[in-house]
Image 1 (cartoon, rainbow, N blue to C red):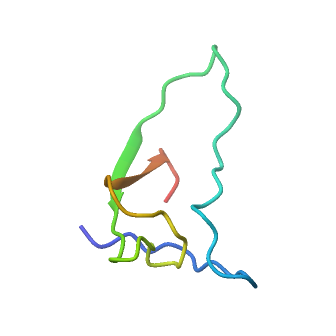
Image 2 (image 1 turned 135 degrees about the vertical axis):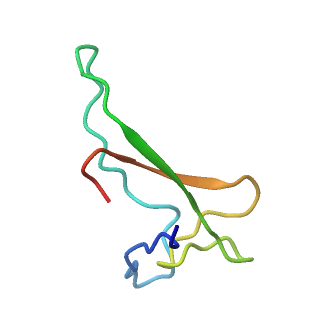
Length: 69
């Protein structure tokens, strides 16, 4: 599987901490969807390949719902 390519972050004052989420609001009536889970590789400084900062420590994963990339 190829490495996950994340969009570059453009910030005037350095890298943001993490990235925005586009999850829909939680709804008890929501139907289950198929999810894909991929590991996000971080460099030694804790940055993803798009430049967002996550810190170091535990592995980081990216979850995408069916039809998302």
